[in-house]
Amino acid sequence: MPQAFNSRNARFIWAAIGALADDAAHCDADTIVRSKSLGLTVDARRLQLPSAPPLQEAFESMAALERGEVANPDEGRQVGHYWLRDPGLAPEEIREEIYSSWAQIDYLTREASARNVTSLLLLGIGGSALGPQLLSEALGPGSRRIAFLDNTDPDGFHMVLSTIEPASTWVLVMSKSGGTVETRNALIETKAHFRSRGVDFASRSLAVTCAGSRLDQMAIKENWRDRLHLWEFVGGRTSWASVVGLLPAALLGMDWRSLLRGAAACDASTRVADAENPATLLVRAWHSLAGRAMVVLPYRDRLQLFGRYLQQLVMESLGKARDVQGTLVNHGLTVYGNKGSTDQHALLQQLLDGPDDYFAVFVAALEGAHDKESKEVETGVTSSDYLLAFLIGTRRALTAAGRRSLTITLQRVDAFHLGVLLALFERAVGLYAALIGVNAYNQPAVESGKRAASRVLALMLNLRDNVTSAASDADQDDVEMLREYLALQQSERKPSLPTHATPQLQACKRNRTESLSSQALCDGSETG
Ligand SMILES: O=P(O)(O)OC[C@H]1O[C@](O)(CO)[C@@H](O)[C@@H]1O
Image (cartoon, rainbow, N blue to C red; front, side, top):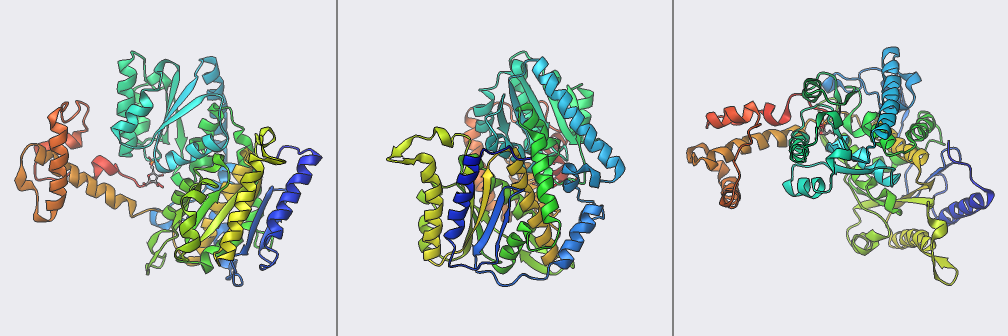
């Protein structure tokens, strides 16, 4: 539950909520939900929303999803992220597995302390990185340092690995599928870094993946410190409430149980179709403003990654070519934004004067951990006062320019309220997808870029060995770019293929005309 407030704080906060609300006195009055128990207000009065679309069926389909019916028909999967914060809702065998994952987290947290682990290195991408990145920033600094490798950029590897002292580090390798190539590459680089320092990698590494995946098998074979299992029924973009998010949060000393409590409380409030359901305001916004982008403006540095996090959650879930009936819809909801007030010095000019093709989502947190230490920067005014004034001022400016915005107000950014916020958007995504009839839980399109990349790699290998006949006319502009790249690379190049290159790559090098098959990069199952 939220921490207790003293009465002065409480007076200040509810006065500030009043100020945020009064500012909309001239707007529609029925589109604001205030929940004291969630410490959350969602104010959609500046969106000029029409009356709500019929949501009854969407609620019914969410209820079926939570009961365990297959809600991701393309992949034949259940969708169970709501069970993670309220295991009582899960089928019995799954419930037990969720509880044992919590016990494993507690055990590993004790182990990390006993073994003087001072830093963590997390390898993962997409849903296997964004959640932990958001949690560690929003609730940090943690009791240990954490760094991330979430790409296949050697400069990025160098920048991060050069700061890692293997002897005091645990490596968390996260991949639901266990075969995502960026994570595989980061793993190879990290192992090399440990080797170069003479430190054993396996005893300091934890694999977080589905049972039986390639990563899981590697961890067994190499006798890694531990393995924690993910389930097919939890999509990557909603996996923060699984060990993907909770393990790093726990190892950083964060109150991960409060995160779950916040999410469970929000789930309880957003499960029901009534006027007090804050998620329905988001659904109404997305429905009536379809085609507009959502600009996410959290006025707290802690929430700087929230927009990026939502980009995956929303755009991977709702950006779909076809609806569940197979009709071409090319649906999507574009999400961007960084943080306030910083974005006032970047995006705001266009938001005010440019095309009216978006709506803004302000996120306010009324109490910051360090607000009370905030210096008086002008007579009677602190930096913290400025932050809230900038939010309200920007919102007024947008309203005056006829631009639409929604405001989400949290009491503060702590574990409980972050859980509330994440669950709020997850519910809105689920309801909205059900309303418009798209499958929010697959991501068929992301595989096509990976498959094309595998063919490009085959072409690159051929060009490197001067097998020019392999390039078709259609490849010519790619060939130009690849040649330029290869010329620079080969000027002082290490061996072109590492000795641990995958059998697929080796085979491809042998067979010049054959493109790398999708196995090399996509490695079987899609995850999401
Ligand atoms: O956890 P994995 O399997 O490595 O996948 C990482 C990410 O890749 C995707 O499957 C698609 O790019 C995301 O949905 C997922 O979060």
